[in-house]
Length: 183
Image (cartoon, rainbow, N blue to C red; front, top):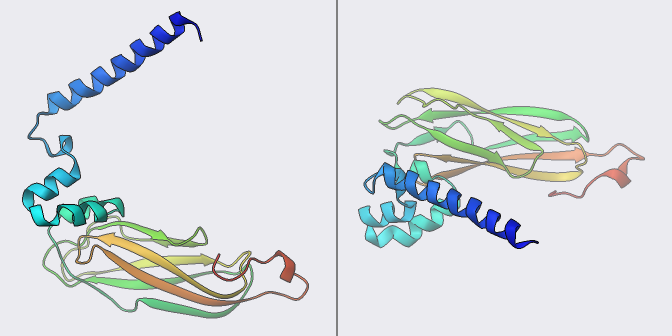
């Protein structure tokens, strides 16, 4: 790489860093966005700083800061029973906000790509119930399957796990293409 190209690259990098530094300085040091999450947590609860940082790495940083509420489900596990490989099924978990604050589900993710949750993106008012739909695609699966959906919300604990199960049967002659249980 030529010296001129190196100098040009350094100028671009320095300019980008300068812009980022200026934009953070412009926000001001009292702005929550300009402080790392661990600094906020340690300032409000010095004893929980390292535990909060660990939770932050798992997700739920916004939910940690929100007013807490309580949550109840009609069930936390659904068994689809026996199904044929390639079937796509769906179940519904009913979630009720049993607390006094709005329930905010920050995120919901399946344990693998075959498990897809559809959850309320708007806050759930106190006392109200909404549906969380979970779709399971058994393509490439065989045998006993157990999958999970992890919800992150403004509850204690921050994360709740919902479980789906199925027994996937492979039609004769297609057994070689199926993945073993658990994938």
